[in-house]
Length: 148
Image (tube, rainbow, N blue to C red):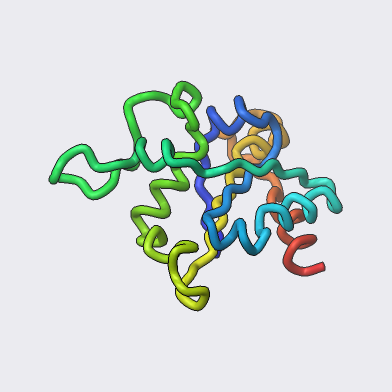
């Protein structure tokens, strides 16, 4: 299962003009990000691998009974520690995927890889994310990973 979400400031500060993959436990065990990174290198669409940590979940933890999960804070993503990782934590909590991790039986686990392509979009479109130009990233990496 793949979701796309972009928080460009931190992703670009962390890795520059490259896509980023983050796996949950089942996806990491299946080597999904490693496969995407290897596939991207084959077709010239490099990816970096980042890691989800406890503090990413702490950023999205509910602060009151009025909310289940926090989607964003009041800082720019480039000024937020682990700013490109916590969106994955949000997606895991908000979607309920947290209940289908490595602590479950194998047939109850759901692999989830969070893909951030902000860096490659920013660097390759020539004018920034606010312009209408787009790139084909991560199509080459995904083609090499899942089709070749």
